[in-house]
Image (cartoon, rainbow, N blue to C red; front, side, top):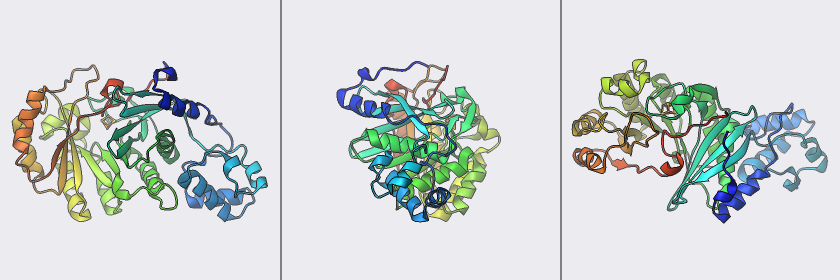
Length: 368
Ligand code: SF4
């Protein structure tokens, strides 16, 4: 693994990174790390140490609301309780290092899990909007042909704690409050459904981090039964679907998952979700040169999505050195022309951080 020196960063970021070099290394003990545990989990944990359940609620407050990761600062806990906590790890992740885009608006951070596996998360600054892009798996099994993460194959699911800790550590290094969370990093969130929802619930918990549900977006490549489950459970979080094609055959060429979860089933599940939940669904569309960027693709999208309460987000492809290319600006403009008449909002996301491989579909880690 190639680690980059923190001296490469601007001074104020070096300070943040240095601070993180001293976050106590995750230690493998008989205890689970506290980050990732819910209020009932921490109440039971406190009881297991011979304490009253309210001690668990105090721990929850310190860790998630006050975001303190040093027991010596938790002064309303009794000294004997703090002594019992000495060998209890707080963080399931260790921040290894990071990279900052030339614009300084994007930071990509590399984390190490307790078992040595690596995962990345990204922080993006856009005016007052500070968004973090979290990973839900190490690698990914979905195998989208245009994606760097796919080249790793599937390695493992992250726990809820490993997902939430990306947020907490990025929040600690950011001087501004994080305003939005997207589950669009490494992995397919709906193939790690339980832990993804548990992580979203921890981010949303009013007694802790208290992130509004509408500020949390879960993005799927199109796992249809899970979209239906998400709708049936009336999950309050926003849903995004990576569409990336305007017909079944076209999508199948870059997203083999279309074989199992067909294009029409995906559109129908998305339509049902938007109709029943009354929530606007976001369709993400990665624009690839000569693959899905003809004006007739745009026309088909209007017909396909016109009756759905949705938003369409175009993402010009972030190149990863493979066979796919980003369309020229002229082609993007020609593609966008018909979409000016679309009955739904259309945005173009000019990815940030592509110079540090932090754009959509560019996250990849290696431990060799
Ligand atoms: S685009 Fe998303 S779902 Fe597809 S392989 Fe990459 S990480 Fe997995």
